[in-house]
Length: 209
Figure 1 (cartoon, helix red, strand yellow):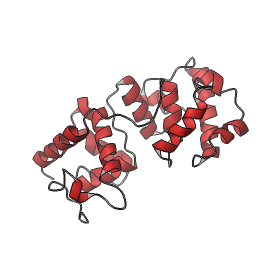
Figure 2 (spheres, rainbow, N blue to C red):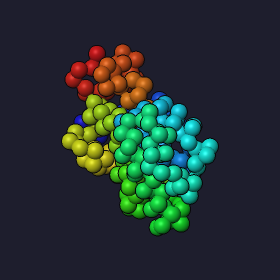
Figure 3 (cartoon, rainbow, N blue to C red):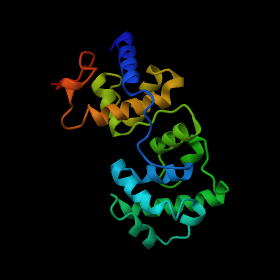
């Protein structure tokens, strides 16, 4: 795709979704970290219901680390993959206490040493909380980037690299949210709302309506 068209797409996304942030509810870096771990294969709406139950009592790694595996599982049972997530969250709490004085680290490299934290989660935390330039590629970002012709990468890392080349570094964190919200509101996985899309004329998606 021509560079000029990509700039038009990004400008339209910014105009449409500029200022929009994560839909996850949190009041600290630790709370966002837990929420993002829970969000894998789970809607933000569901995660917000779960964290609304947990955070009033367990809003720090010190407090959450005192839970048993069974207690943690019971508290997040209505979340997909709850057993694995419970194990990762408790292990992450211990790692934060042992290696980072109970604080969530700001670097992507340090974040990725935490159990259950991959590149996408690390990029989200670093970008949203610490303003580190990063682009987190989730299913929405991956799908929208392909449909709009911003990337043809076959995996999230390849898409991330393509977007980093296309999007100005100072807008990486913001653009992550533009693409997510476009995927949620209009460019849906099963039935994209092409007639309502401001990018319809610029989109190269073969099956657009």
